[in-house]
Amino acid sequence: MSEDVYVTRAAHHFDGAQDPISEGDWRAIIESDPDLWSPDTAVPNFARWGGASSLDRPWIDWSRGNLFTRNPDDFFLRKLIELAAALGARVQGGDGSDYRLDDDRVIRVPPPEGYAPAAEVRREKPPRVEVKVLERRGRTETLPERLRTSIVPPPDSGVKPVPPVSPRTPTPVIHDPGGTAQASFAGRRDDALRHVAADRRRAGPPPFKVGQRVRTSWGRPATVLAIDPSADGGVGHIDIKYDDGRTASMSCLSHGLEPM
Figure 1 (tube, rainbow, N blue to C red):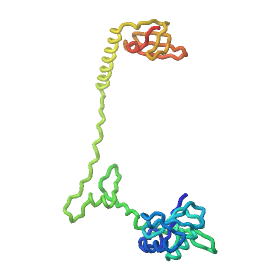
Figure 2: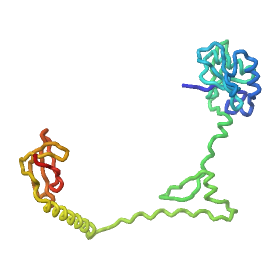
Figure 3: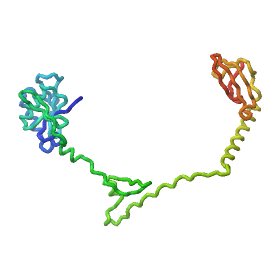
């Protein structure tokens, strides 16, 4: 898990701009320390450290009044603690822990319980203000303060507040005690079946008989098991059996079968 580590003069690195390490302070350190150098003149505040370390090309950068790096090992932490002493600063982890030397060992001291940086306190969201804008089924909706002022104007503004929104009228339930609607639907269905049956009769009987070998529209061979032209209201259906034993049924009007 990666961790950013900071050299900061503030109580917490979030507040580094309140007591900053200036660019001039950092540039003076780079120019006076033989183990530090800027590899890119276009980014003068980014520096490499050439001391003994298990890291591949350790680096330090400057931003918002702090120095920072990522995942330093103990060797690099010792260098950061040395730089912090020269700058009158401290070495701090991303969670507020402090890195220090204790009997020539690097130790990590966790922050006090409940400690939060001032910047984090300032960034907390304001509490939600409950405003009775509308009620639906006994539930009061709430809005943030910034929206409340746009909906409920101050009393001395002369602007009328937005009236409560009326609940939507529910969709009426259609009662059909006499079955008129159902009878109408049944009549339309029967008319459709009669038209389909008439089309089937005009098409004539299928060009094969029960027991005859046929081929489906996608080329699979089968045997006709049954033909019932009066089934399904006159639409008719045909039962076939494939060579692998499976069976299928289809309409006499659109069976797609051809005799073999």
